[in-house]
Image 1 (cartoon, rainbow, N blue to C red):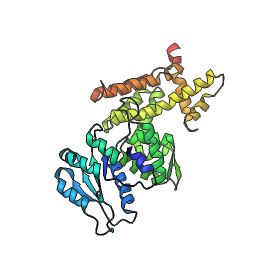
Image 2 (image 1 turned 30 degrees about the horizontal axis):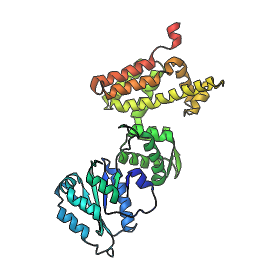
Image 3 (image 1 turned 60 degrees about the vertical axis):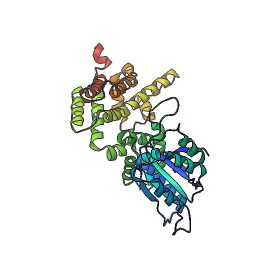
Image 4 (image 1 turned 180 degrees about the vertical axis):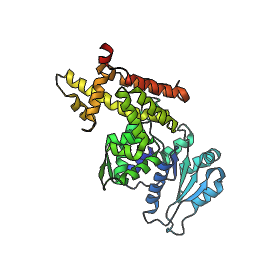
Length: 362
């Protein structure tokens, strides 16, 4: 049975999946591993479980003790299937690869062996056997498919946030709100779950969570300051933008996190510019304010955003994506830390706050 899947997929399936002899949870996200273990326990023992897994710590676990536990039927669950969990199992797998291959291939034990590992190379004999006869579940941020890309699939994480918020926390999270939450908290799923739980306190059951609420609750004053810094630069007030940047960096904010917040604001400006240009190319006269509203700006935000776009001018507004790309590459390469990272952000603010086309020709 080809049973390798991501934790998102396993957790989203409501039907009971018959357990196999050897399960492998691989990756570095403890929250996803915990959620998968809890679901597997419910499938093995039911909701009113009296049985609990027997746990071993990988570096200290012996094959004899683990095998004995697997072969021992439960005294309290009528001989039902039991679970043996080996935590931090990378050294256990390395030391007992031959025994695990035999166990995974032939099975026949009244138990489930759950291996919690960080690395699980798919080109080993053991991985191939477990893929055929057991199950492997990936417990880390999903990567974009295709080629050798190592970029995180933010679109899929946003889909998970929306579904998890609905099923676990009874909130309605719009795509824009999910993207902002991911930008602010990062792809750390335990933290994201905590932030969803926090947001649920501010809305009624099944209530809608706006991007503004995410900014207030998750980002707090730092997010507000980052947005104020971006607005100041777009308004042409470079001195104020640099003052806010200095304040944020001195308070411990990382340049990469600040860039994510700046990017979120600027991407909306870019989207509005492109919506306006597409309508114009199609021979339609669309007010700039309408284009802003189409791309997610609230009615109370459109007046300032319209003024900022006009100050930027169409040519410079069309260059924002290129500015973001250059800054992103700099922060990931030649300007990844220290004063260089600060300079990369300062250059972006300078570009945003540069003189308007009217000022240059007047």
